[in-house]
Image 1 (cartoon, rainbow, N blue to C red):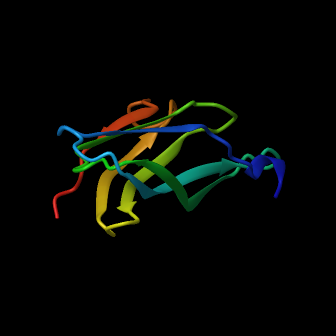
Image 2 (spheres, one colour):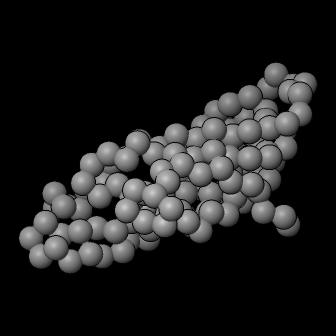
Length: 124
């Protein structure tokens, strides 16, 4: 992989719930980020969109119903902007899936120049 193709951004998630947590059991969640990044070549200055799906597996307390997801990145490196289509959160124990649609840019050079978003779950 060439130097101008490397992307490394710190991403933070915060999942927000509204109800009291009654159980103290652990669950595993898979979080999929559906993103498109723009790669700018350092030699030709051409820009290429690259669609990716990043996968994170986290272990946490049973969260109950997910009401909001906060996502942000650190705006580091040469071209940190990325387009976030959606975030999928899947409970590995129950196979329950919650989709948080974004369809916006996270970046200082696009859209409203924000690097964080608060997302609500889609209605099924």
